[in-house]
Each structure stands twice: as C-alpha cells, then as structure tokens.
Amino acid sequence: MGTYSLIYPRRILFGCGTISELPKLLENRRKVLLITGKSARGNGLQNRLLNMLPEPGIAPLCGIVADEAPIESVDHIVSAGRATGADAVLAVGGGSVIDAAKAAAAIIPGGGMTADYFHGSAKIAGKGLFFVAAPTTAGTGSEVTANAVLSDKKSMTKKSIRGEYLIPDIAIVDPELTFSCPASLAADSGMDAIVQAVESLVSPESNAPSRSLALKAAGLLVSHLERAVAGDRSAKIAVAEGSLLSGMSFSQTGLGAVHGLAHPIGIKYGIPHGRACGILMRSVFRMNLAKIPGLYDEAAKACGFRDSTEFLDALDRLCDATGIPANFADFGLRREDFPFILKNCRSRSMERNPCSFSDGEIEEMLEKGCGMHDTGYAVQRRPVLGCPTE
Image (cartoon, rainbow, N blue to C red):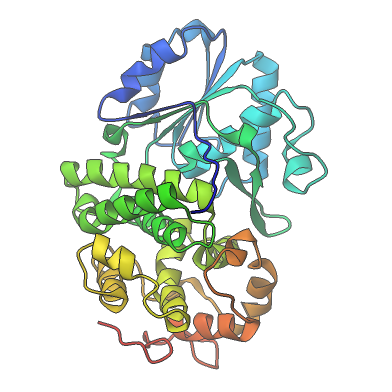
C-alpha cells in the first residue's frame, strides 16, 4: 500500500443553487474583484452576481480573459486588483477565466507581473488573495487544482504555473451555471473531463482515493455526456459532478500524453483545449493500449463495457455523437509542424503517461491517429497500430 498526500480547497460545494452561498462566503471581504466570462453580461449572470453581493465592495471585470488564458489577461486582472485594493477574487466562468483569475489572485500581493512567474524568474512563495472559483462549464476541474494553465502567444508556449498556494480557498460547483453552455463548448469541456479522469486513473502516481474518484467520474461522464450536450438538464448535473470528481482525481496524480500533446497543438492552431484532447484521445489511448494490454479494463468496467477495446470503441462513438472530429483535418496540422509539437510536448504530463513514447512514435500518432499521410494533408481516419475502429 503506497503513501499519498491529498490537498484540496478547504471547502467544496456541489449542487444546484449552491452559488447562492456567495454572500455568506464573502461577507467578511472588503473589496471583491469579480471576474466573469464574456457571455456573463449578455446572459444576466454578471447582474445576478452583483445583486447577490454588496455592490460598493465589488469591482467587476467581464470578458477580459481571452481563450487559453494569455498572460496579458492575467496582467489586466493583477493591475485591477492592485489598483482597487482588492482583498478577494471571485472567478465565475470557464477554465480560462478561473485559471487567469487564480494566477492573478496569487500574484497580486506577491509583486511582479505574470511573465515573471510564467517564465520562471519568480515563484509563488506565499498565500495570495482569498479566492473563490465557480465554473460555468463542466470540464477543466480548475476550481480544485493547484495549477493555472496559461499561454504566451509571443513565445507560442502554453504551460502551468504550479504550487499549493494556487489552490482556491472555496470551490462552488453549481450545475445550473452550466445549463446555458452552448452544445459545442459542452462537448469540448466534457471530453477534457473524460480524458482527465482516464489519464488520472492510469497515471503512475495514482492512489486509492484518486482511482476511486476517477472511476466514478468516468462512469458519470461517459454515460451522460451525449445527453448533456443535447441539453438534458439532469445529464448536465451528472456531467458537472463527473467533472468535479475528475478534477479532484487528476489534481493529485497529474495527467498524460493527451494533455502533453494538446497544449502545443492547441496553441499552434488555435484549437479549443477540450476538442484537441478529444481528437488526440482516439490515437493516444490506442497506442497506450498497444503497449500495455488491458490498461483501460478497469475504466471499461466502471462504464459498463467488457474490456479496454470495447471501451475505446465507445469513446470513439461518443466523440462522433458529440461532434468531436476524428482528426485535425480542419485545423491545418501538417508534417512540417511536427518539430514544434515534438519540442513542446515533453512536459510533466508526458512524463506521467503510463508508457513512454519516442519521437517517432509520437509522429506516428500524429500521422495515423490524426488522419494524415506522408504529404501532410488530412485524409480519412485510419486505425492506429492495427487496432480496429467502430
């Protein structure tokens, strides 16, 4: 029996209507910096939040976080927090919003700007501002993790700043906040959550609690995502819980090769993170299985399938049903970009994959798994290493 140490927000609230707990949770805060996504003003969420909190003590910023949480967006929040004298940050939005706000909450009292921490010249050395995270999408798990995934478009780099001081003080997972999520975003986010659960389950750093969380998450997500994307509210509630459990699992174990590859591919071609994960999942999981027979049998049984192959076939069908492409044909992935991907994929996620891949094997996944042939042009989907597709 191995040893493990678990670290989570000091309080996690899950359930419909839990966002109404905000006034009590923030009652002792003098100045709250409210960060919301760009849709919050149009769908009424920002006004709802402002009416819920003592407005004289609220400084709202709506829609200032761009996709993939660029460091410039974090700098905007840092500057606003310092200018207003904020003593708390409340982030209500998708993963990019929460990651940007999470980083800013840690940086505001620490000095310097985001690039200092992103590029390693400074480290988060102490507790930041009181931070509350409430996701409006079901997928990233950022509300419970000790890292913030940011991007720098100038250096074409996407990576995390990490540390226990980044863990939110409070996570509120209210599934009602996801009810208005567009179908395509729900599909992308859900795929991210599925990959996170499965990669956590087979991580070399998995442990008894993380495996239990990952198995429950996978069962909820795989069985409910298609209906959630179609708008079924009961399914959306199940997917929101699955996403939370997935985040609680992978936050303790790290991820794998899908995420290692998704970051450089996503930033290079502007592909939504969850969509990149869903596309890569098809080929990476099959190559993992070719190296480690039976690798996904436990996940398969938790989701009601016989074995790993049946499970991966079901994931392929789920991708098809929710509009996740079989390859990167629509995004312009070409062979001449492989060196960039190879250079930037050797992250901690790649190190935590259950098996290692050579550069040649990664190129094989990019070619076969992503529907490419030697000319670099996208073609129809083909099996990976002889594994059958549905």
